[in-house]
Length: 197
Image 1: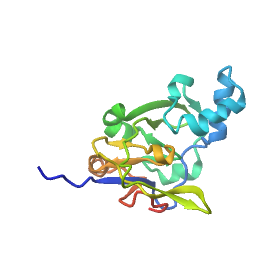
Image 2: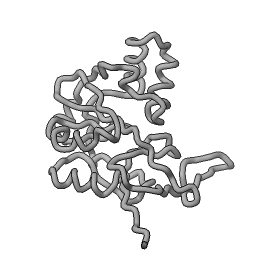
Image 3: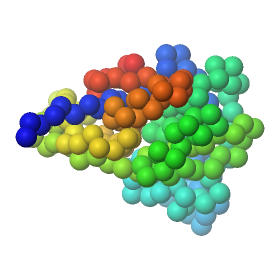
């Protein structure tokens, strides 16, 4: 049996896309600290590290999700999917089209804002091929990755442990879902370490 080539993309936001909501690591941490017994420092660690790395689910910390404001510039752009840090924010059209496909890949977190939006937090970490994934060094210190190769492309959407869950990746089936449903707001790059679309 011949091995097939994996088809994996890094998800980027569209050129000049505004963030749809004003949800930042600091505002996430403030809401976690306010609604739980945790200190602000502990909440910052959860928001900056534990959630992106998949150590903590958002809904385990905040069942009611987040309060946020919709950014006016993004409303005018009217994109269906917005890449926000290591999350996707879907409008109702995108949620109705692909939400059920994403259920097994992460958690949908309620957003209390002026528009009907759905925050998706990917929870699957695809295994990297250690023999082909290489760490970059600068002056003897780790400085990101020189190469990134995954062992499988079976999951629609996933993250990388080597990158601390900071980027979102997908397979060809997810890209097809987005295209077939005419969803706007994200682009796909087969260069998995590219900073640009």
